[in-house]
Amino acid sequence: MALDVLAEHGVAGTTHRTVAQAADVPLGSTTYHFASIDELLAAAFRRHADDVAGALERRLEAAPDAGAALDALADHLAQDLLAPGRGLVLSIELYGVAARRPVLRSVTQEWMLRSRRALERHFDPVTARELDALVEGLVLHSALSTEPTSPAELRHALHRMARPEA
Image (cartoon, rainbow, N blue to C red; front, side, top):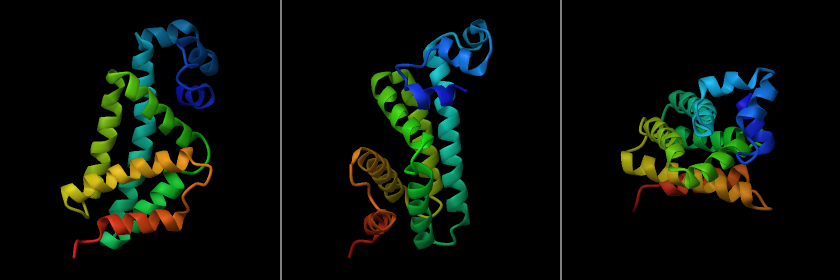
């Protein structure tokens, strides 16, 4: 329920009370399990990050080589991260709150580490880190643009980044 509230109202509109109302439970239930709103937000955003990281891990595990891994990463971007709806909004909300509240940065850090580990199945650690950073930039750029990046452009950018130097 907390993720639904976050997607609908944003971090600013998410309180113990709004989550309790959405879950149809007494307010004391949320305050008992989460002493602060930051604890509630961290738990909700961890669930979102786990879902997205798990989708990436599954895609990359199925990729037989680096080229297929880049295509899988492009599909992850287009279908899991940039698809219109709740997931994209939640990611953007997490980026914003983590920038303002260092206590929530652990959620983004754990997510980035999982992404990099998944990428390291096919790429060296430096390339994995660069690809992960490119993905984050593409998400922000595409989400905030009035002309979103096409799946073909995403694929091209990822392949160009990972191309070995001549």
